[in-house]
Length: 497
Image (cartoon, rainbow, N blue to C red; front, top):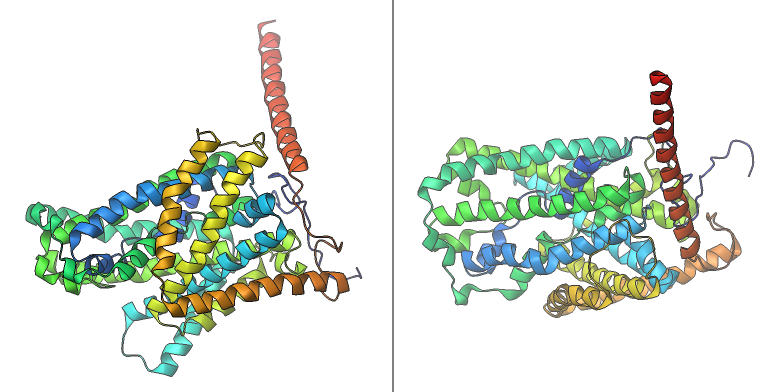
């Protein structure tokens, strides 16, 4: 490498928190910012859940869905994410899990599907932000506003993950605050009998399940930036469970308040953005404006969380040798510059699609990735029972299989309800991912593009070395604690003497 060239730090896959890619001077994410980022990866507040009331034929299925489905879908995914993210505390998250279980080919497919799904998801938020501000913008004004907004939000990601985490905390508080006020104002007017209303003629299963699935997925997203978290073995389980409670309450409580006050005859009016109208009827114009402002700001938080996860996933894949080394290059703020630019470009291109198209496509791709993750979780329990797991779900292998059954059934249902167009488009995406893997392998052989793994052999995860590094790190920490205790004891003896 010649003089003046930028040096890309390289670390072995599966290294511990003290690996070379982690500068000690860079701020780490603690539990509270991590909870906020997971909250925005999954939810961002009750914005977007309104359609579940209309598609479900009334409040009953919507309320049951957001109370029951978290038990059978969100909790299993959250538990599995907590175990695997704590066991593999590196950037790349689920790409590393699947690679460890099934090899680099399927790890690459997992990363490609999840990145495509995440970029589709992120294409929604600048559009929704502009929708809350104005519906009357011309095409050119709207397009340039979309590009400007995407660039501005991308710059915030470029400035540092710690800044994004702290912003997410503030946005969480602001996004949920109008619904706290709305709930207190609604209590005297709630009629519980309205919660059990159901009109089968209005039931739209495809729209209902897509709405539910979209509002309760992406629990695993934050695992892609596990390498940026302070003490991930302890922080991730705490943050995941904290986020589960926050997300469920942020959905169920506003729905209970709104559907308990409004007449069931208005069920068909519950579409995206309807909570602003609910606020108008419960509290007046001031509450409606507050909810609209919170919704717009929530979309900013959703964009920031998704962009962070997507870009650090690309960084992790680059460090594993799955992508060119340029995607592992960091800015002076510690953020992956080119990974952020690629994700932002994808967002701008995909934002021309309709809301429903994006939802259905991203749900299908996400479902494919989750099936691989569940299989990897079970495979690692069998293949590596002695893998160091700072947090482990307290079940044996059979219990691990049972945990995966309910969410797998839901994934299959969502995929079966997809349209023919979605099957065709997703099939093309899968074929492209297969071909792209072999193109990248060819580029490694020709050495036309620089990769962090310079050998022509396929990238493999050395789990034994990984476990050894973890155990070595644990031993060093234990020795440091004992040494500190001995020094303290020695000082005490000296004082007594």
